[in-house]
Length: 411
Ligand SMILES: *Cc1c(COP(=O)(O)O)cnc(C)c1O
Image (cartoon, rainbow, N blue to C red; front, side):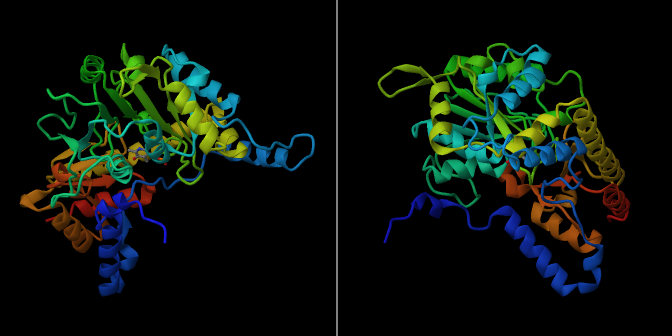
């Protein structure tokens, strides 16, 4: 019998979305007549179909693979040159951010990259995450054995939690203590918060002073509407020495099911060894992909490339405008209902204070019973999410309008 990686035993049993699903199922079984009315504003998945430009490009690519002259087998393990150079040019150099083509590594998504990146990071790093936070950052570190046991409130020994509260506008400042690895996500899931130039600059300054690494998750970059908010950590001077950026086509191109994202790994980013050597991370990231992957399928990479065509850009813009139209409706309706709302301006998530001192899960049950709307309880994202809940704007307009209407009847 083979031994188990016992770090998996440390994972919290009642993971957020299974518990949401369980409560919804029980409600539907007990109230079959209202099941039809149920609207899900819970899980952060897109709802609208793929941009036509991506669909057509993927079809053409599949045809190519079916003909002897244009057939392709294994592609480059770090991604095709055509996609790496398009990304580096359009997302970075066109915005005056110095990123080379071979600093882009194509992957099957940012969630996956969160796990992969730990392959090249040491076990002795002092890790910090914001609280509340996208659960993947913590759980991948638990699985890799970078934490102690889980505490009663769901936090883990050995991880530093950076509270995100209404007082700091849900953007934590760097702490006094030393950290080696800090996860940052802006625009944020779940709070919808964005970080300003000054706030990100403080993090870059901290990282350079402490020789720490920032893992910057920019999955929602395309949702930024405020012209003064940075889209990339690499817009901040000095970030090439201290940051890795994670990007995804999931939330802009609707690729949650197609699967494609990328990391930006600057060649100037250094790692340390136990005996004090300094080495760039880049060749090790390159090696990790060569050995463990054959990249993403050719049709998918052609589909991602098409999102940068003039037609593709227009279609992506229309998708984002659609979701942000929903966010506006939902935010206004929630505010009219007397709820204290955050986010929903540069991100497809609205973060709301529960009324009447309810806990997150009490609010979840109330929204389910009274409005037949599924939301996500803030406590599921961390201890500091208690007392909040998240409404997702990923929905049809019809559903968003219905939810906005129902919020009016919230007592
Ligand atoms: C949706 C999301 C991603 C994207 O994940 P993929 O694996 O690329 O689909 C990354 N980070 C956060 C915080 C997200 O909410």
